Image (cartoon, rainbow, N blue to C red; front, side, top):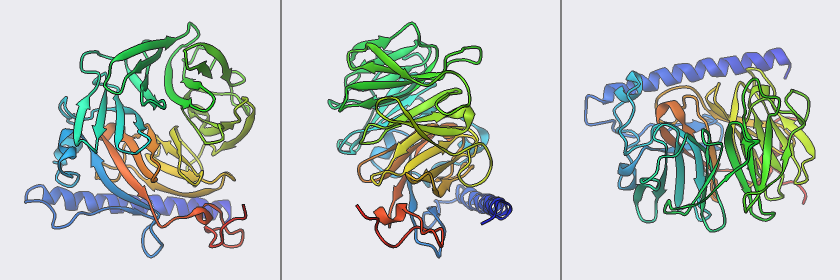
Amino acid sequence: MSENRHNAANNAARRLAGILSAGLLLLLAGCTTTQGPEKNIKLVWPGPPLPTRIKFVRSLFGEKDMVSDDTFKTDLVQFLTGKKPPENRITEPMGIAVSDDGQRVYVSDFVQLCVFKFDFAKKTFTKITKDKQLERPAGIALDAAENVYVVESDKKGIAVLSPEGKEIRFITDPSIARPTGIAIDRARGRIYLADTSHSKATEHTVKIFDMQGKLIGHLGKGKGSDPGQFLFPTYVTLDPQGDVYVADTLNSRVQEFDPEGKYLKSYGERGNSWGMFDKPKGVALDSYGNLYVVDSGWSNIQIFNQKKQILMFFGGRGPIPGMLRNPTSIAIDKNNKIYVGDFLNHRIEVYQLENTDAADSFLNPTTGKPSAVKPKT
């Protein structure tokens, strides 16, 4: 497909998404005056007749979600008027981490200055930091014991907490300016901290600590736009091989490094077409090694394979369940359930990857569509 046709198709898709969003919003808004819609309207990507790859599952707000799914019963006036939820619900999620068994989801809340925990097995929703206010919590990660590592942006470091919220220690270094994202390499005993920094700073890096909190190195070749350089890095994630993926937000790309810090490749560029970004933030990988990138500016999530090819996107700007407004973070569990921090909609949106196997991560060079033949191993 030529660039012009590519852009035209993308713009048409965006217009269509806007029309669908408006129609669904009117339908749901109309239902707020009744007992609720007769059936849930759940979004899928891509739309029929193509096979569904991503399905919207539900929204998570707070305690009520542990006993019932109120996704489509929520009063949309809260979204339309900008009213913020009460204290026992998510306000502005900045970080998400999922336990190894997928039963617990930890969420850092930038406004309520705390970490919430959804425990699906126990059907509880708790504020694990109820006795302590964090200083602008952002990214969040878990170690093998499920201790919680939460970035305190204003405090310029990482609070290490037990699963119940008891403070274990605090990790910092004088070189940290304004940290945001975090990832833990359990196999190598490393903590990666994305130091977003400030506009006047000369150093925009990802700092590397050992598990005891000692600074042992960094990723990045200085502030800039060349390969290996950063301009306001925000979020970071790892693959099973220890490669590091960094959302290089104001360079509108994601950069990949090997465990030794060598630059490998970049995903995306600035623009408004497929495979392009406005402000990429949260990054995560599914069980097939595909890279999911949250774009806060476009309010969607784009999926790339390891060849840097764009596979699809899902989401889009809007208040209705399944749509997003300036999303931030993302986490994917072992069953490819996807959790997205929907910042301005004050919730966590949950999606599911389905009807997909390893072959779907590879594009047929003739059709440009996912291959029906599994790749050689």
